[in-house]
Length: 422
Image 1 (spheres, one colour):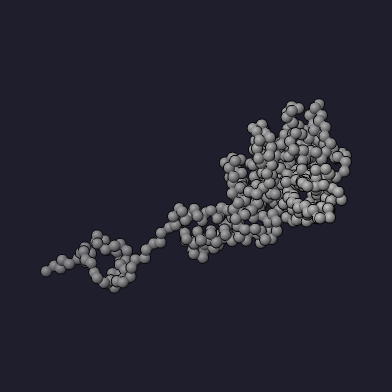
Image 2 (image 1 turned 135 degrees about the vertical axis):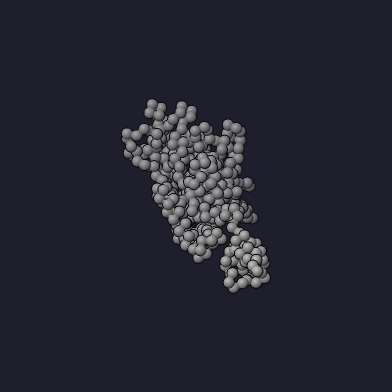
């Protein structure tokens, strides 16, 4: 009698794992091709991979950390390829080292990206003082540069805002990029400002007599730019538009002092900001107040060069050579136009029964610069009296009491800044 039981073809479902069949695949049956697991042992479920949202969230801090290191390299005059390569190595290699702890699993890589990127952004002020916010601004602006100047400027604003949100730099103030114009090359076209012997400043201009466009270098807190501006002897203040100020790293605070101006489009009220300096050739004018005025710029110019800069010089225009010539005026330069929006004046007059009139005055320096001297005039109906305040530190106030001469009538008065110097 033939035994028809063939284990090679029979379909069966054991409730245990036969010792001799463990790990053996049986063809053409209902068993899985993999080894049957012992009773009570469940198949291990494969962990899901991080989705695109998780990967994107990890890329954001990594991008910002890379941009900060890239921007610091660019600010220290490294070639772009060298700054980019160095920043990439400083970001990628530590991330790979941290991810090796988890054997380069997807979650370990994302965790490494978060940990190292946050360590870089938080620790930068300790490693490289004063460079985090400026590095973020320049790095992001450089990365977005292929998308155009407008996108690059907005990216720089985002970088600086994010750097400010990370907190102040406790190790020191941000480094200021001070760029002095290069010496004049006699063989080069006469387009850049220059300083000649005797301190004479020459500003070559373009345009006609009613619209002189000159090149001037502006220093902001982080960046310097050589810009075409309109040389306007009728403008009291120098003006720049918001886009240019943003490119210089200037932030317009909500409590900025305001001033009213008459433009081609009517009267406008503009906030005022204080720039580090303005270069005319090799001559620097320190502490220049600038009005934020988008309507003041014309096509091809960034704004106006006003009297608060030019009145410190004797000016002449040579239409044959198409040059504006500025020479130092005699005596110390009066900077009251620049100071007037940054010194707050308050006063109170007291008339005593004996006829004495005492005025208590408080002068507050709202600027970030030291005020070396400020001459304040007390204007009464019949006479005026001058009071001098010296060495007023940024944010400081000085109280002064003085008595008017006997017989002076001062039922009403006003306080006016007449002259001053940084």
